[in-house]
Image (tube, rainbow, N blue to C red):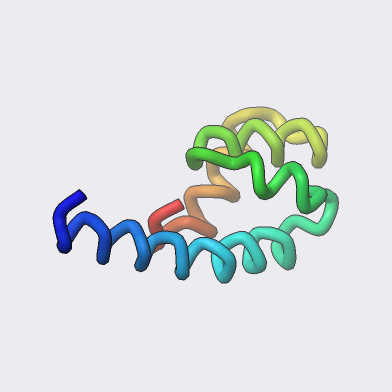
Length: 72
């Protein structure tokens, strides 16, 4: 790994717990295990759709609004 790659990876890891905390606050029906398993925005949409009994377009809209300006 290059020095820049290591710095970017470290930065992403340090931001991740805060993002996961925000997700937990926004969608309390998601368990810590659900949240820790998320790898993409699409994964989050799927979990929101399932846990909150939403149709896919609504879940996508909610996640897009939450994720605006953030890297999930």
